[in-house]
Length: 538
Image (tube, rainbow, N blue to C red; front, side):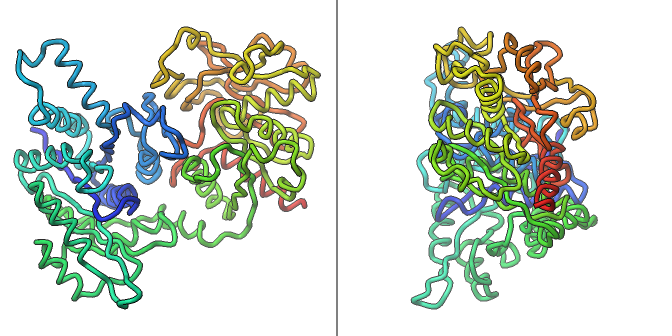
């Protein structure tokens, strides 16, 4: 018999309250108590996945080992829990409807009229229970995107109502995250927005089991009592979530508030084992008390929205903590960089990272940044498009191939050192068709990447259509840039580096996706170590 318990996290009053961080923090505490936990995100938008969404609108598109393009919250889940997620951990309305429509076309509904209830809600329940039915998890936490009252969220809320009825309240509970704002004019915290939010949730047939209240100020016992009375929960089930200095403080804050204990009591599970968070708190202490500081220039096309590079900035934090170093990021828009005061904009940096991206906008600025890093011996890491820009820059400025480019930017270039992958040439649809997920790579010994990983065989996550053109491999290597990592099955170049540079590495994959609190990514560790060395030698 499957004894998996389910915790649903809903949001009210306003978006961006941090449902993902609360879910991840709760999961971390439950994991520390000895339970096997995973987290799932249900997204109400009709896109099949975020793969075709603008980073300005949705932030980073995160990629799992099995090739799912997902919401950036899955990155938080992996970074907190240190376990990989999969296709099953991110479900969108688009995917739900696509599945139901496909079944209808195949005749699986036997002539019935297909409706939101029961067919859409049944599909949602099926997707929610996929992870639980594996038998791998004691508890599945499901975060429902958006806020209660959104038209898009209604089928998900109804599915949760049905599941609570089917499974029983000690097997499926609801945590409702709301805002308790402070009105300066009145000089007090106001509970009415939370009351209205809970009322809206109850109109959908669900009463929250636990209230988590975001606030800038401490929520008094009187206010907790008032919230409990009007929201139909017990006073001990009203949990305050104050603004934290860093997201990595939230597990400790939630433990102090007793969120994990209350959840386990509601689910009729043992609270005997206490979470220690020893390794976690070692990380937090180092992060908050750095002995050094380095400044890294992040060269990107979407720098106005920092969430577009969320996994990269978090990987900096993980690596920085290990080296007891504060990593300060200088955000540099590549479009504003091309031949415009480049020395001034990149002056005094301890490292330069050229970030991933798509399309020709801002490309020349990225190439100029690579050249500056190469010529001024600044530690350099190029990720995906950043690696491709490094190859183009080297081909142009060292090998003398003035027209060198990627066919993504110039289809008619006479030196396509970066070219469309062979299997991509017949692809016409945009969504979910790139080279995605984990692929193997074999590293050459006695290279920077090999020394960073300490291993010859690695597996890393990809998200791209274009690749290093092997027709130019011999010429580029003869000129001094080496291909140091190769996919053993396809022969594709995965990593490049320049041996006579202090630290110059480009990778076709996305190392940032696999960096976690307890396992900082080895490439970021090595990159930050090189930046620290650069800073010390100034």
